[in-house]
Image 1 (tube, rainbow, N blue to C red):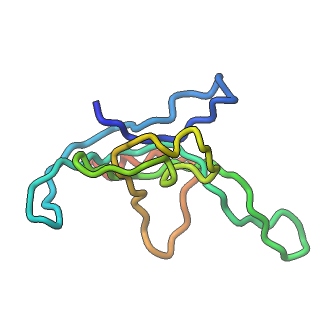
Image 2: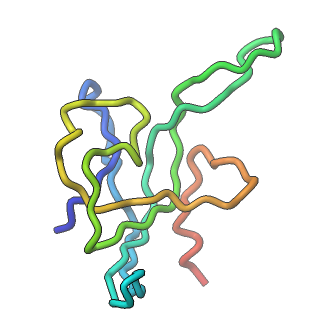
Length: 122
C-alpha cells in the first residue's frame, strides 16, 4: 500500500470515501534517470475558491468540493497533506505521504464533480 494523502473531514463521519479512485500505474523516468512508478487517479477533494456571493463585486474565499486528476510518485515523499487540503491540520504535519500533485489544464476552471476518469476511456 502507498501512503497517498487524500482529503477527509473527520468531523463528518457520514462522508463517503474520498480517496483515490480509478488508479492507473505507469513507469516514468525521474530527474535522476531512474524509472519510478507513478500512480494516476482521480479524487474528490476540497479547496478554497474565490466566488462572487452577491452584487457588491467582492470575491470571497469559500470551501468548495472538486473532483480532479492527481499523480502520486511511488518513491518520492512529502510531509503533511498540504497538497490536498487547504485547511491546515497540524495532526498531519509530521506524517509522511507519497508526493502528490493535482493535474490541471492551464487557464481552465476546476470541475466541481465531474468524473475525470473519462481521460482513460477510449
